[in-house]
Length: 211
Image (cartoon, rainbow, N blue to C red; front, side, top):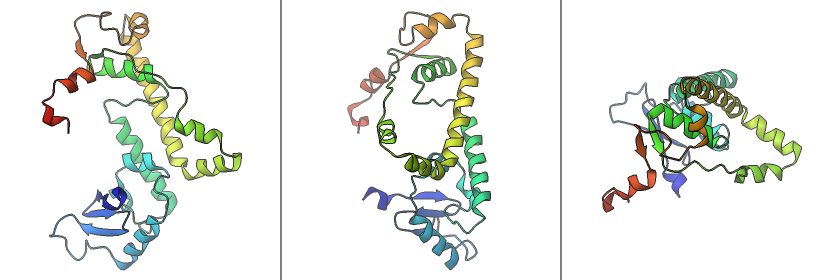
């Protein structure tokens, strides 16, 4: 039900992947902006694909560069190249991002980037739902998943490299790194910083803002 109602704004069009349709974002669209019969057919075809494949790359990329969900806009290889480059560029432009597999490093980067301190340390869970699922698959199934998500795999490698580069730069500037990193979540280690706690921040909101 939720998927049917979801839509994505792309260029001058609203894309409804669940319904395989396009609608203009405003009533001022010209005939030249309206999708052709071929683009509608391409959208219907793309809608039958599994949109979970390379989802991270697609969500971070500027899809207007590749014709949104119109698979006939350009060759597949060119589309993938542009979309991946756009996703990498947008990720690098973010002030902060973290990776689930590196909770402690992600917390340190956040705190040093924004000069905020969490009252508790981030928790590292070595087993996730995806890990359990992957362990139950055959080698052929894993290879197929890797093929379908080749862009996301490359994007993850880029994100991991970039995150560790940021970590090393922050680490090099921190004279108290060893103490700081060993006591993440302990507000008494360093004074003169902004203390931030998600739980207390939520508790301070008026009751009508919880909903």
